[in-house]
Image 1: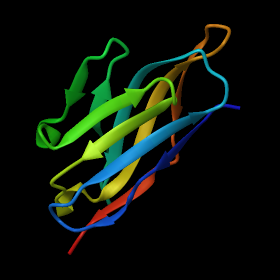
Image 2 (image 1 turned 180 degrees about the vertical axis):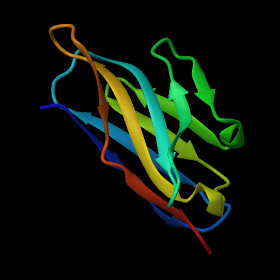
Image 3 (image 1 turned 30 degrees about the vertical axis):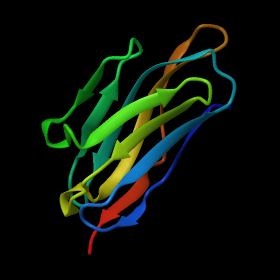
Image 4 (image 1 turned 120 degrees about the vertical axis):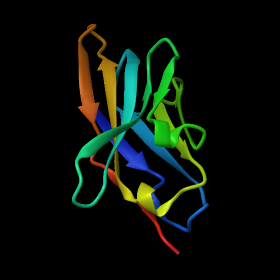
Length: 120
C-alpha cells in the first residue's frame, strides 16, 4: 500500500529553519509532480511550492527566496527547505505527490500533514 509520510515539522523561532520531508512508502515506478500546501488556523489550504516532473519549480511570491522544494528519486522523498521562517508561516503543511504505479497508473496521494509553528 502506498503512503506518504511527512516529517521534520515542529516549533522554531522566527528567523529559524526547518526541512520538511515527504517520504513515499510502498512500491512505485516513479514520482511525477509534487506540491507542498499549507493550512493556517482558520484558513484555507493554499499552495506553497510545486515541483514539476521535469524539474521546474514554482513558489508562491511570499515564499520565494525562503523556501526550496526538491526531490530525491532514489530515496522516494520530496523535501521543503524553509528558511527565515516567520510567525505567518505557522500552519499544517501537506505534501501532494503524483505517483506512477508499477503498471503505469498515475495517482495523486496526499500526506496527513505536519505541524509547523513559528513562535518566540
